[in-house]
Amino acid sequence: LTTGLESAWNKLRGTDQLTKDNIAEPMRDIRRALLEADVSLPVVRSFIESVTEKAVGTDVIRGVKPEQQLVKVVNDELVQLMGREVSDLVFAKTAPTVILLAGLQGVGKTTVCAKLAYYLKKMGKSCMLIAADVYRPAAIDQLTILGKQVGVPVYSEGTEAKPSQIAKNGIKEAKSKKTDVIIVDTAGRLQVDKAMMSELKEVKRAVNPTEVLLVVDAMTGQEAASLVSTFNVEIGITGAILTKLDGDSRGGAALSIKEVSGKPIKFVGRGERMEDLEPFYPDRMAQRILGMGDVLSFVEKAQEVMRQEDAEELQKKILSAKFNFNDFLKQTQAIAQMGSFSRIIGMIPGMNKVTPAQIREAEKNLKFMESMINVMTPEERERPELLAESRERRIRVAKESGKNERQVSQLVAQLFRMRAQMQKMMGAMQGQDTPDMEG
Ligand code: GDP
Ligand code: MG
Image 1 (tube, rainbow, N blue to C red):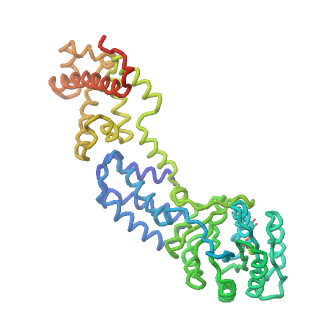
Image 2: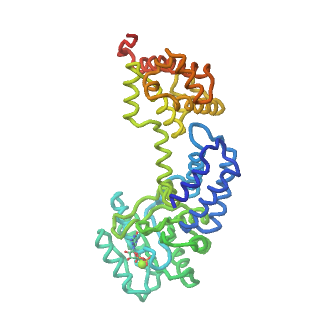
Image 3: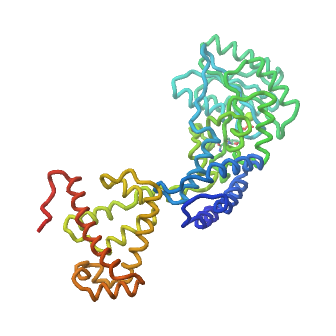
């Protein structure tokens, strides 16, 4: 997939404005990426629509390439859709806080009960678990074992009692023990059905929960949207927990949850161990869904412009007044590649308020100069003095690059001006310690 996206970005390279036209194809690839990640179709549709709207007309060049700009729009929109910020658990104003867990069978509710208790215990809260899944004796045993494992009491009444009654009794017990947080485990079915929903409603009425968290398996495919919607409409959820993110699923369900219910994902499960529960980070999820880790790290790299060693090398050259056409080329190529020309300009005193038009102009100039440098001999690039001293050489460079002599002279003069300017800049940056470079 990453490859697919990258080829989409490649198509954008060289354009300096995002238009409906030039983003159409990358957007098709993004759409495909979302569908491959199992984001529900209606969610994909509205996403593509809103990204397109935001992207078109974006003033591209603020120091980034168009594809980087689009990555950013896509990424931001994904993050926005999933809630932007980390959503914490809500605690009741007066204890106890009651958390009701709901979800289909096998998604990880019982495991989440114990994981949450473990998490809350570390926060210094006392917890109690209530076993309100009465359909399989094994479910009660499972919760009891997990409760022991994390050192949290489990309230159960066997399989005969009604879930809502068990929950009510459990809360009474927890209150008498001054428990801070009560987590209620419930029964799930393989599919949404009426009996499950009405039982959940009954339990909810009985316990008056602070949080109703829908537990969703990250592998839930296209049906995530309707699943979330049904639970939300029927029982009303306050958030979700996405489990089994340690698998290969790209977790498109995450995108559907917030979009459909308007409720945030609060935690993710990343394994079967008790410590495998983490807060949900929308930005990390965005990268996972799009599989654009590489593209984003490219953006980060772009912001650096030059690697540390290049910078150091350059500094040495500047200080010893040996900045030549090779360095010039390396610089301009690095700048062009990384698209961060504005950053460089921003670093030059008095030039930090450049407009996009000025940057475009500057980038064009760089291309122009590059074509002349490309036809210079290795010695000429190494020692610009050769060109300054020989008209013959300048005429040859002009001829081979299809420019005129005056333009070559200007380039040579500019290099020497740059040398001088850079020395001055470097001197200013280094303050009093500037070595004498006039020798
Ligand atoms: P429930 O039916 O919703 O209560 O689901 P369970 O809590 O019984 O979990 C079903 C299975 O999924 C168990 O084998 C759990 O160990 C496993 N499971 C739960 N959460 C995760 C997770 O985040 N990652 C992985 N790999 N397995 C999990
Ligand atoms: Mg269970």
